Amino acid sequence: MSEDTAAVIQALATENAEQRAALAEAQELLIEAAIDAGEMHTEIEALRAQGAALQADRAAQCLFGNKLCDLTFREEVINQTW
Image (cartoon, rainbow, N blue to C red):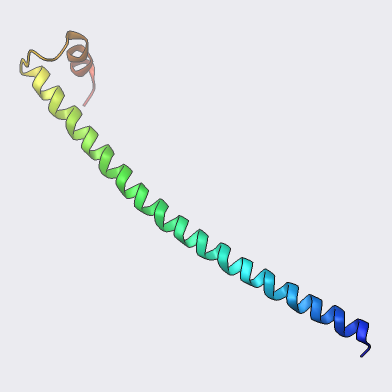
């Protein structure tokens, strides 16, 4: 094996090792991002449920004569199909 061939093989081995390290780092970042996305999804679903509960409470208050509700919202609630 000539020195040129050995140098090329060594350069390829070094580049390969660098690429593997970069890939491992990217995979770790993707796993962290997936975990964060799952947690955010859970939080969003909880907020949606909370918002729906608040809307239902407000609708019930409007239908039962709470004076804080405006007529437009009351009409929207009455016209909704449940």
